[in-house]
Image: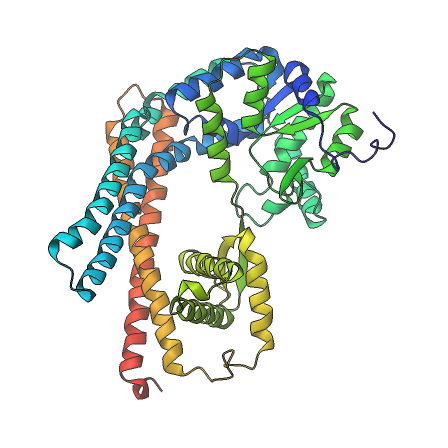
Length: 489
């Protein structure tokens, strides 16, 4: 290695030849997200990925934490994928209805004949029908169901064979307690990996446990490691100008210090490409494309934001006002920068309305896409520096206007809460069916897991019903205050 590069690992991209050599010779460690992709792949792509893993032989290994997370999340993985085949068509129905309504409005205002209107609506109907039929075709071709996974998961069976003798041991209870404290100290100092998950209520230490178990196995075997993961959070990878350079320099330094060997990270699509080239694995172009598509669908990082309730509501109202004003302007008045700001505002409004939750301390927490945070931060700065209760034109916002905006936001929340309630009802019914259909050959641990899942689903349904009731109560109170403001004094 050039002396000009030595000591700056992680700040420059390793050549392709290094990854070829790693796929051929290194210990290959796969992350939980790679195993869960098996529940999203088509049957053929799934077989090809499993064959690649099987072909690695004793060079394949998974940390105990990965196995633990896999068992905990595999039902959710298949459920989330199956839900797409129902949620996407439902969303398309709403879009079709909205598109046809817009055409109807145009036809009425322009006094179009039925024949002219049909020329506009027919292509819309044909396009939505074609897409819906194609989605149904993919749904019919997908071979997994929740009941099938519960009763006799074919992926679990294959992984049990492929990974037999290739999984790590768990930490002892004493070690786990000590390591959780170590993780908390590292997270406070933002030492990778895992510090971005430190605020999670559950399994915040998961990434750190994967890393620690990986380090111990590499040291025991005295081997270099290639970690295959679709995780691209900043506490795992070094990014420059939006491109991934490689593993964080801190991770490379720690691996070198503890194991005195090489460490590389790559994502599933690139790994499959290298396996096809170096190992002669039978990996189709379709499978590699699916790996890329799933990775892209998973890369949106969400940031958690907490604001005092009064500030949350004021910001929500202010953003809604700005968005409404923009909607009144013709597109020709918008610059590319204006359009981007408009789209970002819409994403933030949707995220705040969907994920906003009142906390016991009175603050409100919500989650927004990470790429929207700079915009929100700048908006908050400008908002807090402006005269209180004044808009950008210096006009005082009326109490009626604030109530109107709050009512609008609550109605959006109500619609989402009702959708959440319906989804919870559907999920509860599905779980109950799975419980009823479980025959006597189902192992006790599966029965217990089903029972726990059924109980958790019932709690979620009760919570969703309470949310709907609470929002309906708030709407009723605000509506009454708008009708009779003096009565609420």
